[in-house]
Amino acid sequence: MVQNNIYSRKSIPWDGLGQAVNNAKTMQEVIKTSGLDFNVVKTEAYAHFPNGNSRSIPGTYATYRADTDQILGTVGKDYTVVQNTKAFEFLDDVLGQGMFDVETAGALNGGRTIFVTAKVPGHMRLGNGDDIVNKYILFTSSHDGSSPVRGMLTPIRVYCANTLNMAIKGDTKTNSFTLKHTKEVHKKIDMGLTLMKMSNLYFTEMEETLNAMIKVTIPDEHVRRHAAAIILNKDEQFLYVQNGYDLNTLGSVSSYKKNQIRDIEKSIFRGPGQEFHKNTGLWLFNGVTSYYGNTVTYSTQTDRFMSLTDGNAKKESQKLFDKIAAKALTM
Image (cartoon, rainbow, N blue to C red; front, side, top):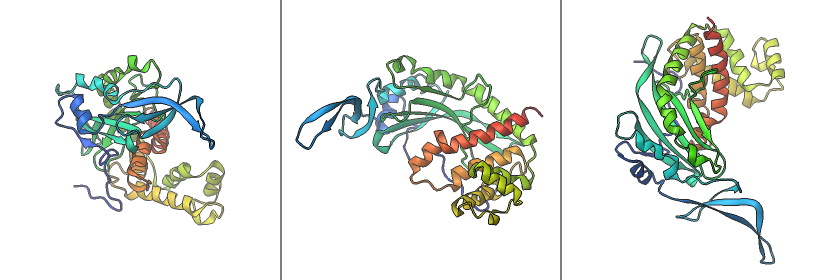
């Protein structure tokens, strides 16, 4: 059994944020069990003046929960509300068929963001087969105008709960879709079902790509360069290299940035699951995703969820994945 060294394995992003819905037979059951059985209303936004008068704000609307009157956000005139039941109704086509297991559903920030996760049967194997990656599909929507209806294929590495929801460059088997909240959204909502049907093609290619990354050699001395590239700007990186990768010589760089670089290095060398694939491209990629998933301190679990699934952690991990995968696939 692999032992973690300095960091403990944290949970996958949505653990603790929703309700288990494994036993639900329909999406109506999922919606009710997870507390998503509320409607959202769009209404004109008004400005109230000290003299007691009120006036509508041109082109500005608010969304609110019909059950609590809680304001969720401000949106434009073209924004179309997608009710929770509508956003995920296509999942009724797969529930009970053994194709996918809908596992978790819930609301974040009082209902501003909602999500459903489904587990795809089987798993991916990396290297000699002891390193296992589970296959998930994550669906999200928002009611505050912050994000579209979204679906994404999300591999989760078992040993460290790393979120590996990377897009494969040049791949027609896309790992995600987005639908803006416009009047056309209801016509396209079943794109989620198409994504689910294409999922095995993506997971097969992702497994091949991750395994190809094992062929890329990453010497210990290169880890500092990669860690610095995530945190430092180009001028700071130049000085870092010129000073022989000695952080103590960078007086212009804040202690906060220096500590971030040290944490990334520790995640790569000694993070959970880093006993696998040592000094390879996959080892480096896993170390960086482990940094975002297991080391970075987020203000809330919701912030962690958003960063790992579609925020800064996802974007930085994607950049590194693209770089290593491009090299691996030419070897």
